[in-house]
Length: 349
Image (cartoon, rainbow, N blue to C red):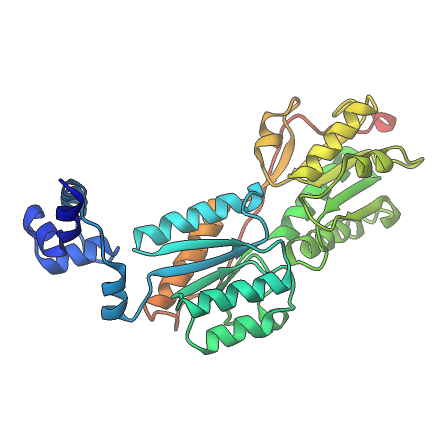
């Protein structure tokens, strides 16, 4: 079929080819409710066979929506973000929306510029993971203007004072407590937590849980060392070497499973420290590195896919006008996955 003919294919042609009504085609193509699996399959097959391309401009004029959802993350290449974005994109695509992702590097200026750009393009909604609370007013203004904003694993505007602000959160505090409890149970008393910007909710919650578990166990908190990194992707091997060369070096490290974990493992190798005989290592986030390393790294795991889907569902509820009476905040659990990278410290073996 040539390009000229393809451009003339309409939703009416798809309905005729699939043997269904225009309204059924519309619901099937836009992810609407009350569409049987057979109708959805037949419509998709007919649209593909005919080369049907939806006219987004016409739909925008007809429905007064753009079909576009904006997504702001610090770094989409970070494995702790990539799964979230992919799952959200898949769910929104099923519902007929296009997800546009902007990397902000947690820069408030870039966040504001991206938000203004999306607003100018009449974005239907936004998923945002702010780097700080510097742009709380931006998110409030967007919401006040009628653009639903879902906060993804960050503090809702005004530090969470508004209970009804839609957000998807991860129980990082509970995860940190579980990891710390496990290492303390093995006999470790000098444990270092290496995490990113303490101003952001995930790191702040991890630090709180880490310290709370030392206090709950009645163990000297001097052994709970916290090292803050400006970014989870900027941790240098030299930082880990300096930590492990100290006179009171930790016998166990809990590290964010990005370049921070990689830096720790390289430093341990350079200092000829065996994992876990000389140093126990626990990853925050079950990344590919944690799973394939030898020995396999014990990890805190939460489903990035569940986070992305939950964020997309919260947004779709609001786009359908179902915001009232539904849960505004989802708190997703963190599990401890035991592998081979942790053991009792040598002194207590």
